Amino acid sequence: MGVMAAFAYLFPNTKLYIMLIPFPIKAKWAIIGFAALDLFGGVAQISGDNIAHFAHLGGALTGFLLVLYWNKTNRKTLY
Image (cartoon, rainbow, N blue to C red; front, side, top):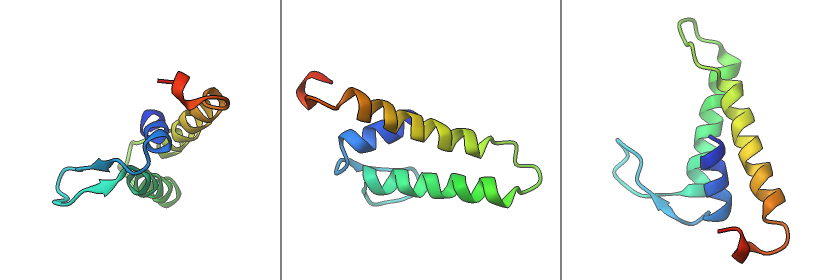
């Protein structure tokens, strides 16, 4: 999730093709959708769901904050 959040921050309008969805989705909307699914999964606590949803959200936040910190001065030197 951290890598996806960082990618969505750096390249928000890149079109992604996600499996089972036949049309492209921009990266910024895809990460928001994945984060919403993880938030729902963490709050709902469905039995038999052995996924650490809040860990995914923490990873997304960490990836976003790291890229935000590293990218403060000049975007051209980051990649």
